[in-house]
Length: 168
Image (cartoon, rainbow, N blue to C red; front, top):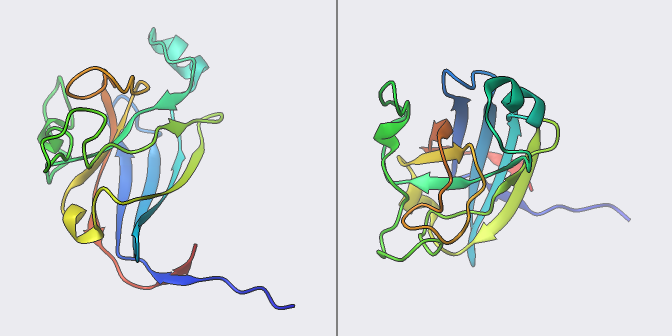
């Protein structure tokens, strides 16, 4: 029997680059508009590991990283926050954290790498084109307002419209 896969038009993507403190961090995030939501596929390399963090005096032995869409349209910033212009979480409904439209499941690192696939109905692809995707240095606690105590922004990418076919 021939295997068949559903093909979807890739609607948007973001290329994640690490901050100057995390230059090894790279990733891609793809957004596919589906009938009942948006499928999000993400892949990362160069995530901090406990050993690399120990060398910097940091702590995130869990290798769990918060992952959010932010309302800003730029991955620029300043010396203290290299991605400050990404602004806060995308939250058009003015909901408490973790109910922001931009709140996404955490990234579970595995030796500096990770893959993530999920479907959400919190936004459409059109809603997020032009916004930013942020990887934070700590896990999201899903409680602290307004951003889950997720820590430093360690990676950022701008969501851009993209077209073509790719099997999920």
